[in-house]
Image 1: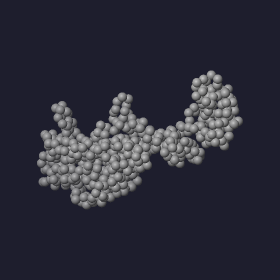
Image 2: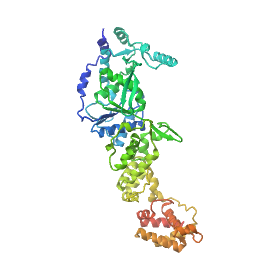
Image 3: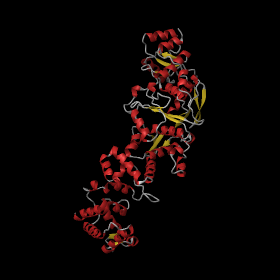
Image 4: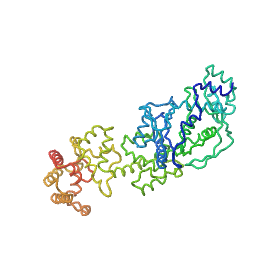
Length: 550
C-alpha cells in the first residue's frame, strides 16, 4: 500500500489532475499592469460596511487598470449559511452599480466569465483534486481526531499557556502508516484531511503587504485542516489558495483581522510552488461614540448595515464618496480638484490608508449627500425620490406621479443658482420637507400662529388677500408686502425697529411669517415667493380663506 492507494481510496471519483485544471483555467489575456480582484463574500450574514469598503477598493483597482473584478461566492460553511444572503449580496452590488465582470448567480442560473464555477460549493471536485495531489505527495494526511479529543487538546494547551492547534506531539495521526489509515477509513471512521506542515515556528519570514509595508511572521507549523469531514468541502484557507490561483487573482483586499492568517496562506502557496497574490489589509472601520472611538458594530450601529443607506434614501454615489474619503487620505483633495470626475478615475494607493483605523462619520456622509443632491437637476431629484418612494412609501409615490411637473417645480426652488439650497440629506426626508405643498397632506392641518394675536392675523391675511396678484414679480410682491406693513403699522426698516420697537405692532418679518404659516403651517421654509409661485392662485386663495374663516 502506498500514498496513491490512500488517495484513491479517499477520492475514488477524482480522475483529473492539477494540470487538467490549469489547462481549463489558463492565464488571463490582460495588460501587464491589469489587476484581477475579487469580492468573495460568505453568505453567513448580510453585508455590512466592513464588507463594502474592500468591495469598493476591489472595484476601483480593477477599473483603473483595465483589469477584471469578479464575484466569488464562498459558501463552503454550509452550517452557517443565512437564507437570502446570496440574493442580498447581488442586490447590493446592483444598487451601488458595482457590477462584476464575472459572476454566477444560483437563483436565475446566470453565469458570466470563463473561470466558472464562481460558487465554491460547485467546485468541490477541483479542491479534492488538489487535496488528492497533496496526499500522494505526502504533504497531507487523514486525521481521525474526534471532537472530544480536540477539546481535550485545546483545554490542555490553554491551561499550559501553549499555542492552540494541532502541531508537534498533538498531531497524533501525522505519521500514521498508510495501511492503518486505509483500514480506519474502510471501517467507516470519520476523518478530516490536514496539511502536513513543513514550517518551523522558530523561523521568521518577511511578507510585503501593500498597505502596511514589510511585515515579519513566524512560519506556520500547524497541521491545519484543509478538508472537512462532514461534506468533503475545503476549509476557507484551502479554497482561497485554489481559487485565487486558478482564477489568476492578482490582488486580495481584506480586513486587517485576516493578517494573522498570512503564515497559513504563505505556506499553502509555497507548498504548491505558486506565486501569491498581492495583499492589501485594510484598517478597521471605526466610529466616534461620545468621547470614545470604537469599531463600528453590526449589533449596535444601524449604519453598519448596507441596507441602512438604501432605506434612508442616500444617493448611492454619496455613500461611495464617503467610503472613498476614509479609504485614502488624499481622496478629498483629489475630489476638490476633480469635482465632475468619476470616482474610479482616482488613483487609489494602499500606502495612503490609515494604519490606525478608518473613522467613518455619518455627519460627513450627510454633508456629502446634501452637496450631491444640491447639484442634481430637478428631473434627477424627482426620479430618485419617485424610485425610493415606490419601494418605501407607495402613497407618496402615487402623489408624485399625479403631480410630476408640480413636484419638479418644488424641487427646483433655489436650485438653479450659484449656491443652490442644501435642504435634502437623503430622499426619505424630502416628503417631510415638502408635504405642505400637496393639498392631500395639507387639508387637515391646523396652523398654529404661536405668539401672534389672532385678530391681527385675520387683518393681515384679509388685507393681503386683497392685494395678492399671482402675476407679480418678486420685486413687485415684496413692495406690496412693504406697503401693507406701512398701512398696518409694521416696521419695514429692521435696523430702526431693533433700536425702538415701541411705536410698531411688529415688523415686516412678522407679516411675512404670518403669510408663511397660513400657506405652509411652517415658520421656516424656502423662499416664500418661490413657494407661492408654485402653489398658484387657486391653492393660495383657498388656504387664505380657510384661515380667515377660522
